[in-house]
Each structure stands twice: as C-alpha cells, then as structure tokens.
Length: 262
Image 1: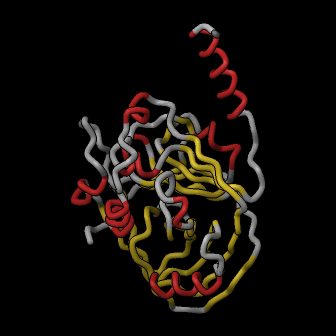
Image 2: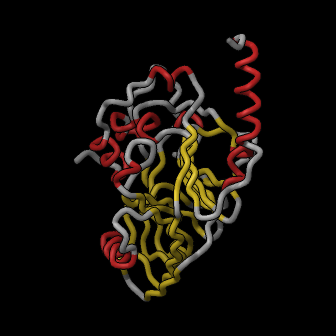
C-alpha cells in the first residue's frame, strides 16, 4: 500500500496537471459547488489565475461573499455591496465560479423594450432543448436594470445565504449600455450548479454591475453558445468534505436568485 506521503505527492501532481490544462471547446466548468456555497461555504479555495485558462465568460462570487463576480472578454470583475465595480487581480481567490470559452452559435437582434420575464420567454422560444446547456450573452441599451450584491461575511459559523437576504444591497441604473453574462442550465445539473436562468450585469464603463434582479432593455443583440458538456471541480477543503449535501436547498436557491423569499 502506498504511504500517506506518496499519496499526497500523487494528489499534488494530479492537481498540478489539472490546472495546467486549457479548456475544452463547448464545455462548462464549475469550480466549487453551488448548493454548498449557498449553504454557507463562503471561504475561497481557488485563485482566478487558476480558473482563467478555462474560459473568457462566466460568473461567480468573491471570497467571503464580498459581492458578485462577472467574467467577460477574458477579464474578471467584482461588484461590492458599496456598488463599487473593479477588475480583479488574478491572485485573488473565489469559492464558486462557472466559466466557459464563449463562442456564439446563434445571434438574435431585437428592438424591445423587453422586461426580464419577456426576455426569458424569448430565450425559451429559441433555446428549444429542455436539457440543453446554454451560455447567453445579451448586449443592450438598458432603460432600467436592478442588480444586487451581498456584503462581506466575516463572522463564523456562516449562515446560509437565504438567511442573509436582509443584508443584500440593491442598485438601480437607468439609461445605461452594457452586457448581461449568464446561463440557462438544465434541471439535471441541480446541486453543483444553479439551474434555470442566472445572469450578472456589467456596464460598458465597467463601473456598474451585480447579480441581475430586474431589467427593461432595448436594442439588444443576444448571442447564444450551446455547450456539449460540463465538469465540476468541488472544493478540496475539510469544510466541503463535512458539508451536508443531502439537504434539499432548491427553495433557498430560488430565494437567493430572486433576492427575496417566496
């Protein structure tokens, strides 16, 4: 039987090999675990520099839930609960990110105006595979966009995110140009990922952002990238190994996505 030190060396070599690889085309990568993250695992475990080779498009969260993350055109941006949005250093770390190399398979132009519900209805009419994995980029003029960000959570033990909704900060922007970066993921990916629609916003001047709550948009170009598969890299932490993943957190996830309890 291999010694403990030998096993540790093997695991380190495997980890080094994993993060030296570049991304597979049409593939989604999850670093972290959505259900565990929403359940309170806010401590970062992987750097943005390690994630960067796997894509140019995505979203996630900062260390200790300090706002929201968006990945666009190979750059990582953070929006804090103060509303401040800025580019992140690759040495910083994250507890949860999903990312892919975005390459548009289909482009749609619409004049609008469209509300969030109308946008999702339009997307449903185009994303016809119920169990398809889709990355979606929406470039638009926003008559109105409402986003949110959580403050940093430092006190342990961390509470589940659905119990922290009173702490979130909301931002309302009018007549701004920018992008929505997001996904529609199928039900069978529930647990490690957030299924259904999930979007983050980033303004053209990169000073406004956050998790999308509501929107009215005009003059939009919608780009769709249909993905073929996905990989999940859960945290290699003691906290994750002890975390209860049997609990059904679907209602908690929905409340967090909407920014309010049902």
